Length: 235
Image 1: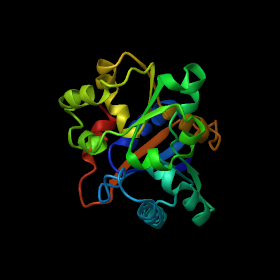
Image 2: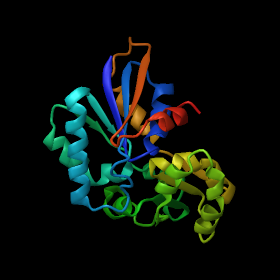
Image 3: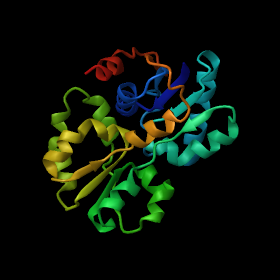
């Protein structure tokens, strides 16, 4: 059974973990919520590289993962190549916005990428699709973490932020945004594109197909209980 660490700044990566746990077998999952450094979305590239290094060293000290899934578009965009060079014995799987499949189905001008400021600034895919519109809703990942079980309270904000756009497809460029699928669909009649399927396909390449079970545990980087994330995982 492969040891697979899934990391994010808060609850966003739990959405990825849910998908993987349901669709992949043969993993001992550890979810690490880096609430100490949350949110990532408006931090600089140098700072995020340092945060990423610290998380990997921490995981090596007690879990020794075979694979680390960076379930965060921002940390993927800013730090994954640095981490691959720094820790060559670990497989790193990143989280890229599903712009490519969205643009295969729709014209670029009909696609909207919702992401954090750091992802919009640093992600290499955005330059390959210059007509895709991008939009960052300030502090939305933090607001999702703070209202994880009362997400309808964010509906007015989402309506207000999306009313100027008329896309046919929205790419969820932050794993936190998986939690507000229903709220986005109430605001816009669109097709949503997620990173989860692509991550699952990458992970499957490294697994033993004879394994038929999974395990999961949760940790936080602050001295807080991971119970919120466990509860959300099971919701």
